[in-house]
Each structure stands twice: as structure tokens, then as C-alpha cells.
Amino acid sequence: MGLDDLPKKMRAIQVVEFNKPYEINEVDVPTDLQSTDLLVKVAVASNCHTDGMVSEGAFGSKLPQIASHEGAGTVVALGDLAKERGFKEGMRVMCGIPLHPCGHCHDCLGPESHRQYCANLGGHVGVTTDGCFAEYMRADSASSTPLPDEVTFLSAAPLACAGRTVWRSVLQTGLKAGEWVCIVGSGGGLGHLGIQFAKALGLQVIGVDARDEGLELSKHYGADVIVDARNGKDAVVKEVQKVTNGQGADSSITLSDHPDACSIACGSTKMHGVVVQIAQPEQISVPFPEIIFRDIKIHGSLICSPSESVSMLETIAKHGVTVTTVPFEGLDKIGELVELVHGGKIKGKAAIIVDPEQIEHEKKIGAKY
Image 1 (cartoon, rainbow, N blue to C red):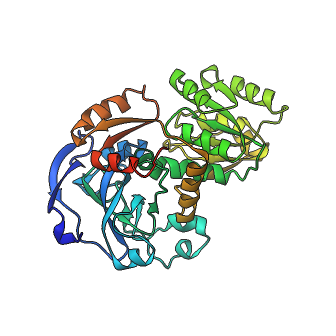
Image 2: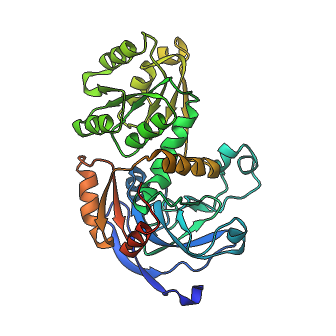
């Protein structure tokens, strides 16, 4: 299939005005591909916390803009350099978020785990450029990842951001099998994946959450210890120390944007340990004794590099990591999705099935996780 065989128009969910509801509009199919680009027929696109920030204008996005930076689908057209990288038409992919890295800055040329930090990008899909809530979307082959047959589109879409983000956070702890990791915000869209990733790497997991639904999900996905954050920081730290011989967790990951979350993570971590900060509250507040007297190091982390994305999907295919999703059929269901997400009772990730035919097709190749 060539570009000339594709439709000229498509339906898409757009941010048309900041702090206003999404609109579903007919727009042009993005056929102006660069050499590194993939044109993906979207199968599934999902909602992320960052989508709310985009809608509020936090990133100064140029409007109108197609929403969602979490997508998966099938390649229907691609540039020459994308072909040289091993991509081809008909390939199932998890779409990349960074678009058109410069290729010559210190991050592009630096360690593999830094490549997603290029400061000279053409944009971020669904954040500053058009995203995945559409029938077709443009992604960069430099940051997109071929899907193993075992991994479904419904899992791959939320993995595009949530999965990549929390997978790298687990890697950034630097822990080895048998050590303890404390995940603050363990029962959310990222948290339930973080538990499974940590367990797949042989870690022992303490799940901390402040919602009944989150505590239930943490237990379901295998956290070794469950702690209710509603009892306060001191109680959480006491519970963590009880199961770690009074030392605290070897490392912690902060996934909750609650004002006390990072402080709880630091208090729950042993002296000289590392806290990986993923959540994005306006301010990260930590009592100075945690940093000065206990030598706790706070380390930020973004999404995966290309090779880290590959290792994540390989781990999922091998260990059977599953993604809890609440699927909605069709772009017209965006209002219902937003209502559920803002209601605060969602378990896992909300996603839209854009193309049911692709879902049916992948069953024939054994996609199951």
C-alpha cells in the first residue's frame, strides 16, 4: 500500500481550546513523512495523566492538536531511513513519543539510556505535536518499537508512555534480585506495571497507595507488602522498616503526585539510598534531614531509550506482564473516558479501540498479554 492508496481525511480527537472539552473533527491524514517517519494506522490509543496537562496548556501546545501520546497500531507507510532501521509495512508497533531528534547533541550521541533526552527534538507526539487519538498518526522510527507477537495492541498503547516510564524507573533504582523496592502510588496505571516489572526482575516489592482501589490492585499484581498511605508518613515508614530489618527499602519510586508522596518515599528508603521521582507535582517537597542527614538521593527519570523499550517488551513477552485497561470502543467515546478518568475510581488505564479489525487480526498471531 502506498500513500496514494490511503484516505485523505480521517477523524481525530483534538484539543481545540485549553481548558475546554475535546472535539472530534475531520482532519487531513498526515502523509508528509520525513525519511525517519512511520505512518501508523492506529489500533488503540490511551489516556495518560499528561493529557490533562496538555489540555490545560502546560506545554504551550499549538492548537488545534490531536490528543494522546500513547498509541499502537500497524505501519502502512514509511520513509527510507525507517526502512533501513528494519521497519516495514504491516509491522505492528508501539509508537514512539519523541519526534525527530537532532542526532548530534550530547544526549543523541551519549549513552544509550540518554537518547530520549534530546533537547532539540521536533516535538513530542500528543504533547507538542499531533498524537494518537486518530485513525492515523505519524511516529518516528527512532523511538518506535516493533511489537512481539505475544503483546497486544491494548497493552502496547499504554506501555508507550506509562510502561516505558515505569520500566526505566525500575532500571534506574539499580537494584538486584532479592532487594526491596518501595513504590509510592503502586495501585495506579504506572504502579501496577511497576510491581510486575520489579517482580520480573526478582525484586521484593512494597506497594504504598492511598485508595482502596489502588491497594486492591497492588495486592492483585503481586506486591509482597501493602501499606496504606492514609495512615500518614510515620506509619508508612514504620511498616516499611518492619519488613526490611529496620533499614528501609533499598530504593523507592515515587509515582503519586500527592504533596507528601516524595517525602514518604524518602523516609521509606534506607540511608544513602536512591528515590526515583516520576510523578510531576508543581513542587517536590522533602524535609531537609532526609537529604542532608540520611544522604537520600532523588533521581528524576523520563521515558525509555529505544533499547530500553525493546528490553521492556521482551520482558513482557517472557514473563506475561499484563496491563489493566478500561477499553472504550470508538473515538466517539472520548467523553465517557474523560468522565471515568476524572472520577478518580479508575483501575489501570483508560483506552480507546480505534480500529477493531486490527484487534481481531492480532488474535490470529497469538497476542495474549
